[in-house]
Image 1 (tube, helix red, strand yellow):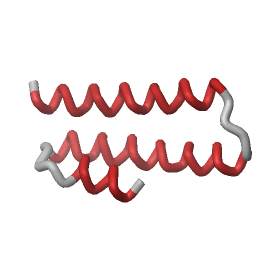
Image 2: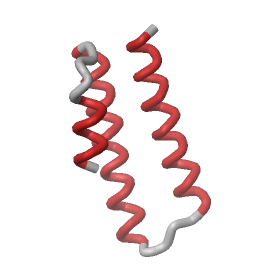
Image 3: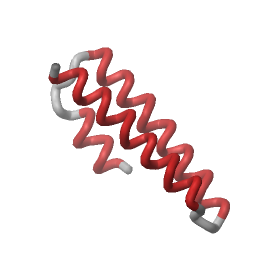
Image 4: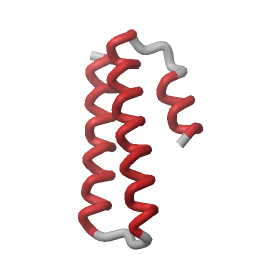
Length: 65
């Protein structure tokens, strides 16, 4: 997670985009910890991670628009 955080937050985005990315990454990290404690990865977990991915892409694409 630190690598992803460093790559995304170190790219000179606006303060608002950085804040949104920081929040999304915090939520993703908490979710990752939740799933790892469960000991099993189910289809719903994968759908949730894909949702995080889409949300991050939206923030990045809005910043570049």
